[in-house]
Image 1 (cartoon, rainbow, N blue to C red):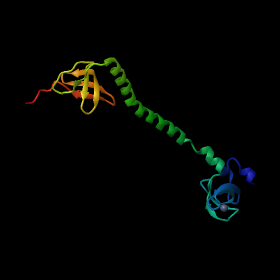
Image 2: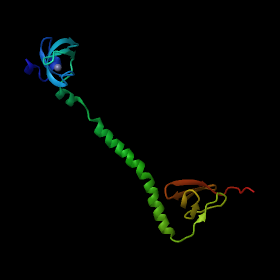
Image 3: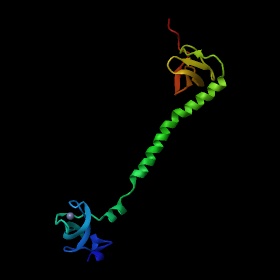
Length: 161
Ligand SMILES: [Zn+2]
């Protein structure tokens, strides 16, 4: 009887048949007797070992076949996101180090928003430290590469008295 039901127990079973199911009380896969069907599927079963009646739970083999593996995929995605996040400042740091080597012993100019800057000039910012003018965006803005980040800074601001 049990052998006949193996494979597609939910399709072929009928009340009174025996089938493998997970028993919550035994916490194990045991032989159960089908007590009720619903929509041609096994609905209620009675555990032959402990005689408890409960809803049918497919055997472990059925469950492991059906369960997808989201955790592995999720881990990969998270890893990817993490590496993207951490690689960002590194790029800036490499560029900063390269620019620092090129600059050599040149003296940095103290950053002052009222002063005009040109590309490749070296500035010293009181918060961000040593920086290199990567790009002059327009007549009032410059893009500066600092050790930990790239900043857009103001320049050529009218000096206030
Ligand atoms: Zn049981």
